[in-house]
Image (tube, rainbow, N blue to C red; front, top):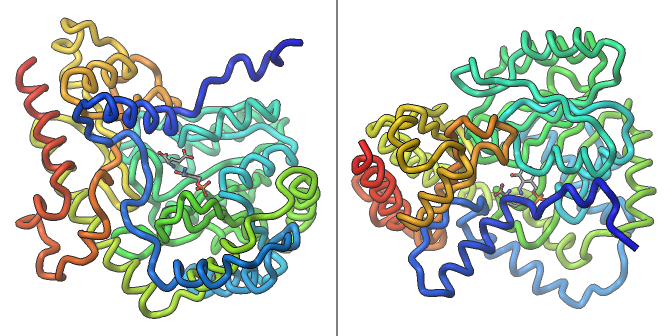
Length: 419
Ligand code: PMP
Ligand code: GLU
């Protein structure tokens, strides 16, 4: 017996691998700044935790598509927050949106269009489901995001193919997002070319200005919105994700439910009951999200300014919790240190400073491009949330995120030394 060829080519997912590696180094007694992994620094809101406790005794399997009351709460939330036209029957709940993204690819015909850089797991999932990934290079674009012209060129080049586009904004890894006119232009091209859009809006609620727009408003008939409670509700480890469909794509929702019924059966029952409270989005949840955004905004501005000041370039942060600095201005000096790729850059930086980042190559970038993803969430979100509002400014940055401040200092000193 041996492994299948397509499995042999895979390695453990980069995000999870850097988290394990950082934790191992910490156990060995090393100081590590954990800017490699991206998970919410904030605790799950108290009232949601209380619901989980209240429902811990719920032991029966739930319907494959999810608890009807939760599906209703999610569709109301998608309507109220992002103007989607949907009902409870348009929603499916899964054990993390990652799993739903995978079974969507499993169920759908067509090649996958991915702007580079894109989150680490889309392309391996395409590989697992025998799909071709068509990468669109966004290097010439300041924001490193897809634009309508790039999409149109790709559609022309693959006019004989069925195409699926995964669009993720605010973006992991760039932290950038789209304006209304950018979304409208992309929607027009998608409609003209009958592209299926999977709009990964898992960081939508964490737009720093609180103004996330969904492309589902401009291309409702062809857009599935992917989201969940991992990021805005601090519950990555709870494993609950959501897909919201237009009526036109009900056939795909139903097919995904068949696959779900033969694989994961249903999402954890107590977690689904607790998630109802999160999606009701009452005043204290709203306050929690607002404060989370305000904290992430300050931290992102601090890191962005620090890195710019030393000569790194990157799109300016708009949402989520990532930055995507490019070290190209240090190319010559890094070469003398034996650093020629983003992988070598991150390895050397971790060895010499303890700062963990993820190489741009894990996000689809050319290995020699000296870019890396930085997650600025290595801080105690519970403490930060407890700070009074007048402490949420750059003067109090050391109080908000001491480790992130030190990590920036480490990166700056490291680069100054080789300058
Ligand atoms: N999409 C993006 C862009 C992400 O960063 C993540 C977080 N890992 C996911 C999807 C999956 O999140 P989850 O499975 O926790 O819902
Ligand atoms: N989304 C997180 C990241 O990009 C980690 C979780 C995961 O990859 O499943 O770092």
